[in-house]
Length: 204
Ligand code: MD5
Ligand code: FE
Image (cartoon, rainbow, N blue to C red; front, side, top):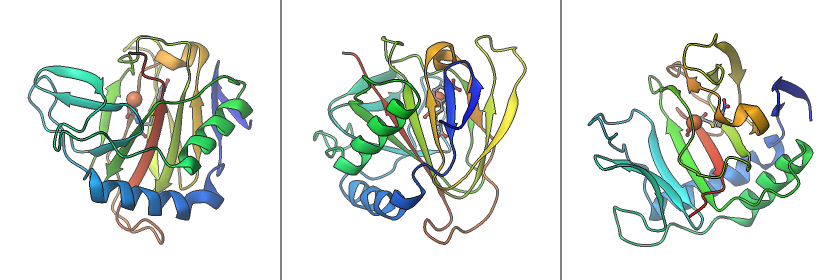
């Protein structure tokens, strides 16, 4: 592992670079079956990030709340299978960061177009926080905001670019984080977008 951003959080720069073309092609295939959509928060706001999922469980939000479910609410069908390349990348990155037992059963796929953002939040819908989260950035660069365990803790900024992988475990697993509004641009492989794969273990 390369840079420890906080206790338990490892930034593996360009870790997925060589697989990026394959990952983007898989995202295209998944989104042909389960299209990106702008989900609604419990508060009634439409998210600027387009989302879909693959794997046994998918993260969803609507007026009723945030949760994981086995089916796509738009189609009623199971989420598309998690490609083998996704699974092995997530397992290998977690292992390299010191989390040898991580096997994700959920992959949220976020699509940011210029202007899209994700406000400061914690990931706490998984119930079991002993598992890390593995995040893969593809396409346009973004500025990641990384705070602490309390909302008011100071926030540091990190650029995340095509092929970067971050593994969040230990104390950092529950740290506040967000993505600044994406700047305008076009990426050679991904076009006018940033994609983020977020691998989690949803304990249900
Ligand atoms: C993204 N997605 O770039 C980020 C990558 C989300 C989300 O935040 O919830 O979909 S995951 C970043 C992350 C996960 C778990 C813990 C921490 C960051 N952290 O402690 O900062 O679209
Ligand atoms: Fe998050």
